[in-house]
Amino acid sequence: MRAPAFWWQAPGLCSAALAPLGAIYGAIAGARMRRAGVRADVPVICVGDPTVGGAGKTPVALAVAKALIAQGKRPYFLTRGYGGREQGPLVLNPAKHSAADVGDEPLLLAAVAPVVVSADRVAGARLAAQSGADVIVMDDGFQNPALEKNISLLVVDARSGVGNGRIFPAGPLRAPIEQQLARANAIVLIGDGEAGEQVARPARKILRATIVPDADAVRALKGKPLLAYAGIGRPEKFFATLESIGGNVAERRAFPDHHAFSTAEANDLLALARGRGLTLVTTGKDLARMQGNAALGELAQASRVLPITLQFQDEQSFNMLLTSA
Image 1 (cartoon, helix red, strand yellow):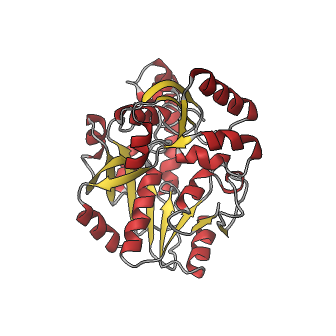
Image 2: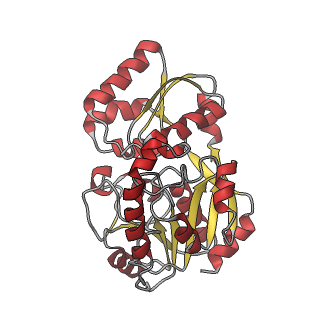
């Protein structure tokens, strides 16, 4: 889905009209979060997002796995594989599975550590442990009570915070923010901004982090006229990042999160880029969704990607928190 603009603005008529539905949704989500979960055979570190997409959850999950590997651990990612048809539990095979099978995010995660895709989180955790994991990194599932978490990280965009502060569908929150903060061991605050500061302030621990674009990609894109396109939670963040590195974003195309590009859309993007002499650039998630689709092969080949990593201001505190799990 594409997040409505009013989610990220001061509360107005649209959010007010939907507030009663949000109250019902929040009550159900809050009650569900209070349920006790099943303890896995290995520690579980959960990376979640208090809002519906776009905070930077996947870069945080990747950073967690890399830090664990550096500590000599064998992490496995556990994800439900949103957007894919497979229910699992299964261990992802990048040579066999496409985004249509398992979704786009698992394919990105698989570049760092093995991935178990499972709609049933308990069954997925069991498979991960049986397959050799000594720690599980849950990408999403913070609001899902099925599996007990040893450490929960809640990712907040410092600039946008939690938007209008209301619960879906009146706003972007997945559950009442107070209940979510109470169940988080730490808030990962990405970037700078007053909105995120206000949300994170009551938290027990705040880990500040910054998105760092790949230096080689920056050099390749800087100064070029770009046709930027993205089907992620907050496409405008991707466009802003390109501009911040000196990219000349001449055209931008925003699509819904996890969007499956059609052949017509691919042809339109290619034709526009050729006609105006623009360089196509997209996100790693969008490129992952094109892999294995012959109809999108030309667009995938013509598109450049801006890889990003997450850099924590206090790496020692971050690593100590992971060790405590």
